[in-house]
Structures are given as structure tokens and as C-alpha cells.
Length: 180
Image (tube, rainbow, N blue to C red; front, side, top):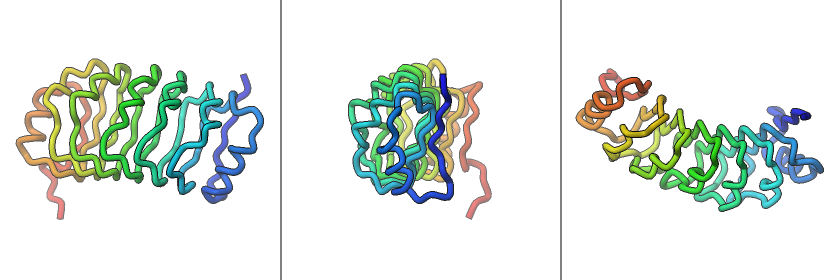
């Protein structure tokens, strides 16, 4: 299988988007970088990327994801930072290989028990969101091992119980930090 990577750090977002849209054999793409493309919606041709393992959609204008994202059966890592998500997109729970979700700097205010539907999820990045509440049942997650909740609106009690119940997890928080 041909490893095709579409990443050009020197090209601006619109140039990367045009390259992707013009690409004839999208089915072999394993890594796709569409960050800073001013996307409000995802291009339909993204569903052709059946070999896709890593997708960067950070720094766009996304508020939701289309249902066809669930057709990306090989997707393991998705970057959605700096968009406008108000919650973790539930459609991602239908991606059977998804291990990492990066949602940093989105206006997400809670982490609810729906995260239990993400069966293989190992890493969840919610750095600098608006998290005020974490559902205690998340400690029952079968595979989650890394949780980044730095720079949120959580109190000492919220962090303490999480650290107590999620033993074995790597939790990054600003609890105990002498931060200004």
C-alpha cells in the first residue's frame, strides 16, 4: 500500500484544501492536514479517504461533524482544536479505530458519560476549554489513559475526586499549580 501524506507546512490552508480536492486517489491517504482552511463544513470527498489514520481539522470554523465521518473506519487520531465545538462530537464514537481526540480550545463546558461510548479512546485532550463539570462515571471508561484538562473551570474538589477514581490515568491539570 502506498503511504500518501498530504502535509505542506509552507502552504496556506486554502492551498492544502485545493490540493486535497484535486487529488485523484484519495482512498490511499493515511494522513491529511486541513488545519486553517476556514472550513465551516467538511468536503464530501473526505469520505473517499478510507485508509485515513490521522486527520487534522484544527483551527477551522467547525461546530459539528457530518455523519460520513463515521465511515472512516481506520481513523485513529483526530485534531479538532480551535474550532467551535460545544461538546465532544458523538458521531466520533462510531469510528471503530479512534484512539485520540484533540479538542483543545473549544467552548466545551462539560465531560459527560457519553465518553463511555468511545470504546478504544486512550487520549482525550480538552486543554483550555470551558469545562465546569465532569461526570463521575467517566472513571469507568475501559481504555482512557490520558486526559488533559488544564486551563478549565474546574475546582479543587472536581480534580481531587477524578485523581482518586481514575488511578492509572495520566491526568494533566492545573490543580496544585501556582499559576497566575
